Amino acid sequence: MQAFLMLADAAQPDASGKLNMLGADWAIIGPRITPFALVIFFRASWEEADKIHPFTLRLTDGDGAPVLAPAENDGEPKPLVLEGQIAMSAHTPSDEDAIARKVEVHSNLAVSLPGIAALLKPGHHYRWSLEVDEKELAEVSFAVRSESDREENASSGTA
Image (cartoon, rainbow, N blue to C red; front, side, top):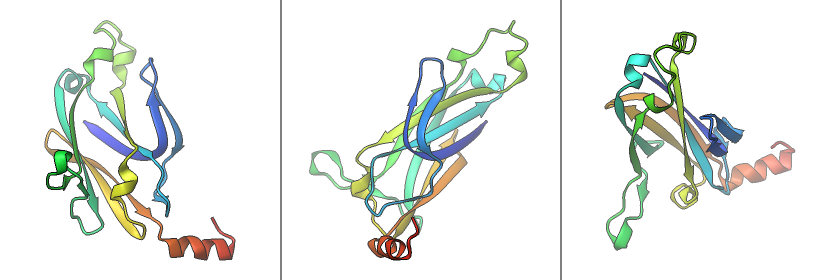
């Protein structure tokens, strides 16, 4: 199995299994952080697609420490970890569809992150990592501009 991660301003799957994205493939945001989406693309052989694959997404800071999210009911903050399972066989063509079986099975997932701004700090960088079947398959890093970077860019005329 292969997996790829991408950041986008917004992403939403449609009924056909395609993923519609806006503002995709950025690596720098801020300093004011708007909601964004983490997009995952999965690719698997037909044999792998018939299995259920557990996955874990982790957000760490530039030093590799977990980013902490507030706990429910005023408990201790916990690392931001998202877990799930991917099963790709539900949308695969039948065994008789010889043309479709010449390519890998594709699947995707979009995770909207509306409350993420409260966890990220300007002037820092972060890394999302994806493990599938307990093996890291993909990662994507991004930086949050500091207020001073924004002021420098404005005075120099760059975006």
